[in-house]
Amino acid sequence: MKKTLKIIGITLLAIVLVSVLAAGAYVIYVVAEYDRIPENQKLDIVGSAEGVTETGVEYTVVTYNIGFGAYTPDFSFFMDSGVMSDGTVVTGKYGKAIDEEHVLNAVSGAAEFLKSQDADFVLVQEVDTDGDRSYNVNELDMLTETLGESYEHTFAVNFHSAFLMYPLNDFHGKNTAGIATFSRYGITDSVRRSYPVDDGFAKFFDLDRCFAVNRISVANGKELVLINSHMSAYDEGGTIREQQLNMLNEVIAAEYAAGNYVIAGGDFNHELADSLGTFPSEQQTPEWAYPLTNEMVADGFRVVATKEGTGTCRAAEIPYEKGVNYLTVLDGFIVSDNVKTVSIENLDTDFEFSDHNPVKFTFVLQ
Image 1 (cartoon, rainbow, N blue to C red):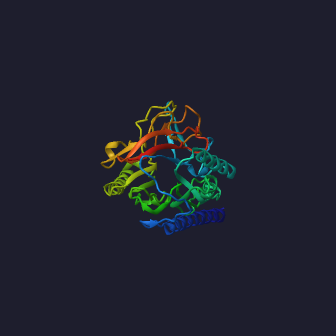
Image 2 (tube, rainbow, N blue to C red):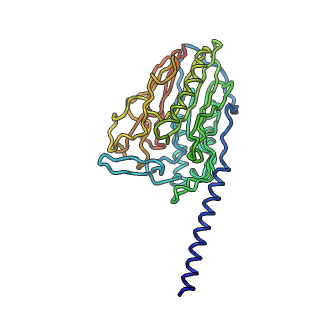
C-alpha cells in the first residue's frame, strides 16, 4: 500500500512539475515572440490609382471594422463581457471564428457591401492576412479583388501575435492582421504611426495599435491627409486610449497647421455621438463606453458621427439579436474645419458580416 501511494505521489509531483515547466516555457515563448513594429514605418502603396482631389467637389469615404471575418450574428467573443438588464453577467464563447465558411461568407459579404457604396476612399480595420482565428484566410486579398483595380491601397500591420493558447476551449492562435486603406486617387506617401500601448503583461496579448497616415495631393498644392485609425478596446479606465488620442491630436494639429485637409476615420473605441441609451436593448450600458467629444480633439477639428438610424457596434458577449444587444457609436471621423460635412450616415447591415456597421462620410474640401 505504501509503495502504491509513493508511486501515486511521485506521479502527481511529476505532472505538476511538467505543467509548471510547460507553463514557464510558454511564457518565455510569448515574451520572446513579442516585438513592436518600429515607429514611422513606410508603407507600400499597392496599385496604380491616379489623379488628385480638388476643392469644391463632393467625395465619399467609408470606414468599416470587419471583425476579422468572425463576428457573424451567431458569434460571441470570449474577451467580451456584459450585464443583462436583469443583472445577469454574460461572457462571450469563441476565441476564433466558428469555421472557415463563416469567415469566407462574412468577408465576401463585407467586401461586396463596400463595393456597392462606390466610395472614393475606404478605411477597413481588423483585416487578417494569416490568422489561426480566421482559418488563415487572406482577407486583404479578398477585399482587394472585390473592390477592383480602380483602387490602390496601403496596409499597416497592427496584430502579429505569438500562438495564444486562450481561451482554453478555443485557442485564439497565431495571427497577423492590420488596417487597410483604399483610394481611387493617387496616394503619394503612407506611414504607419505606432500608438502608445499598455506596457504591462497585457501587451503580449493585445494589438500593436497604430494608425496609417496616407497623403493624397490636392489640386491647389495642399494635401488631403487621410488617417486610418484603430484605438485600444480592452483598456480599463481609458488610460491608454487617452494617450493614444493625445498622440493623434498632435499629429492632426501639425497637419492642419501646415495648411492640409485632415480626415481621421476608423474604430475609435470611444462613444462618438452621445448615443448611450439611444437604441433598444436588453443589456445595461457597458463600463467601457467612454465618450469622445469635440472638446477632446485638437483646435480646428470636430467629431463627425451620428446616432441616427442605428449604432455602429454591437455588444459581442452574446450572439446578435436585434433589440437585445447593446449598441453604441464607436466608428466615425475626426475632421479639420477646412473639410465641409455634406452628410454622415451609419449604413445598416444589421450586423450580418461583423459586429460593426460601416459609416459613410460625404465631404467637400474648402
